Length: 386
Ligand code: NAP
Ligand code: MG
Image (cartoon, rainbow, N blue to C red; front, side, top):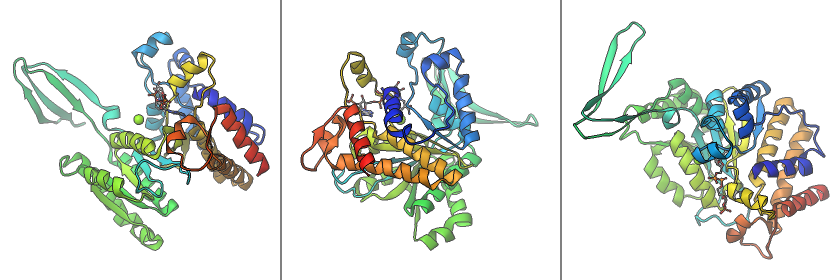
């Protein structure tokens, strides 16, 4: 479904105004199958080379998709490939409007999630243990010396599962710097949360690296700008977030960020009202919608139905990418265009023209639920009128 929305956004709102000189990489399943997924690596390399990319939602195949698309194997998530390649941090921020009420009553300003997009359970090693067996972690240094750490002992008939995860100091430092820089660029406080009381080496290392970098590189700049940095335990943070007024950045480890960003998106109203940008340490950015391909709507579309799928997150992926291109190449007209398009879409919602997913949280007067096409035309009208 997002491919269809993508096409419509380009035809109606971008191509008539911008001479796009984009390179195009097709991350649809047939092309990934045809190239043995080399196209995803090509896309990652092009992103690094060009400095900015905008990505349409893609399918991460499961066994059902293998059959549906006749795949030779379960290709990995293209997002995981892109993130691993760019070693980035994903920032997710809700798109808010005064006519849309978040489900959490106290929230007055958007909360941005900063997700470390590298390592942990996403690049883990898993093992099914069959007892009787002793599970150990064996570390072999380059000089051949060995160190063993006992993990667990499985008795006869006592079967189970084992998981090994890892991360690198350098990647964690990149994550921390991306968060500190982002906090300074937005003027919002930064909170980092983990579980160092339980994970006394692993999560503790995250906490230490954040603290060291803050002291060495950021304390003065934060003080100057009146921005604060805090560390707290993840469970304490979850409780704080629900009672807060919002308006801060919440830095999360990879899995926490995955889960919490979806919680935040739907607590704000809709998955389609959430922007997502991957920021690499070298300043490369990849913009996308936070939601998936909206399969259920697609099957309705195939049945000839006009759907009311919300294009906001995909549209904001485009405007975000264009604004970053404008920043990199110093093209103020392009930055103004991106801003004007976002304004036109927000004014459309304020005027009560919305897609179905926003109906239950709409608090303005006279609301009209429209199809995706009608919604995009309403944005185009407002954009033209200025
Ligand atoms: P999804 O596409 O995000 O959709 C889940 C549900 O959320 C939809 O059925 C719809 O609810 C609602 N929704 C999401 N986006 C919407 C929009 N723009 N407008 C209106 N409603 C919207 O998640 P999924 O169905 O679990 O996954 C579908 C495919 O997307 C999978 O193949 C998955 O691998 C892929 N995926 C890709 C990405 C990515 O590329 N970044 C992320 C997540 C998932 P209703 O049906 O109730 O209207
Ligand atoms: Mg997720």
